[in-house]
Length: 481
Image (tube, rainbow, N blue to C red; front, side, top):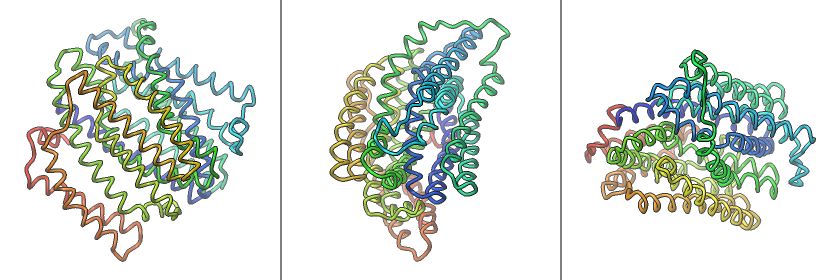
């Protein structure tokens, strides 16, 4: 199981790098093609669409990873197919109602928030497709496979998105064309979901599909509120910046935020398969094995994320220059946000560990309390410090949320992933920082400094740890990766 986890996470990591790179480049394309103001409009509308998609999912993405592994193990094809169809149909219907309601009532977000954001309503067309695609990806994860996530989102949807967005930005020179292209990419993603689920016989009509809808919804619905609150916790800054500041400032913040999110790529790769693994090991009472996996994975997520944080902090000016953003405030916001993302990553997949060990209500309590605090902090700090205030509010909330998670895991499950063995990573980081600083001083173009520093620093980091000696758990992880 341990080798399986690292192997599957490796597929998700490599695919995630590719997909995350494309989605990151998408922001660069918009900023350079239409300006940071257009990027601000786009960021606000994207957040609104994805918030609707989270609501439309009804928590069924978590239910898929809870029940699909059990039905696959039991060989219950009827329940597997019925549950899959149920989990796909509901988000599409609910998302369709949400999107239809917006256009039926001629609802405009610019009227609601009092700012000129008329293009935002166009994003709601993507709600049913985004919600269905994400639940479909969760169904494929229940098969303990990560390649389909790579095929569907990291390659299929992301490639189509950047091609159409690039066409809209550089050929048509129109934000509306950019939005329609972005929304259509989720239609493609949904089509790929259906293709792969049918191909893997997850959806099959060879036997009559059956589903215990009450049981599935009984598990999923309590997680819906937690998912919505978690999403708002993540994106409150963009929403409130769209209310209080001009689109150009929102665009500059989006450039900083999307850069900081890159630090989560390792954690997201592990999260792509870890929930199904937790559910399986927990159901079979293999707690010691589960604890070992959690400890080993969290350590390496922390190592790599801290290294990434240092890299982004040192090269903040060069990175933001790719978006045409040069303000000192944006650089400060980027560094502060990186600290928050690092805090989130350094607790590992702790949120999923709570959910899959029947402590899902703690997730709801945690996110509710922190989301309220985040809203209050964003309101006051944005008005006081602008985009730097938004970064401070978001980082404070991330730190508090993950302190709560790791404390609860220790209290209720008796698990904590940290030990004195982390000193090896600390030594490696100390040895790597001078190389990063030296690279940032090279007399070459900004992009050249970024790549040179990263290419040299990463092997030095791992070489130092290798010289200090790997732990037994480290060798198991790297054997497959």
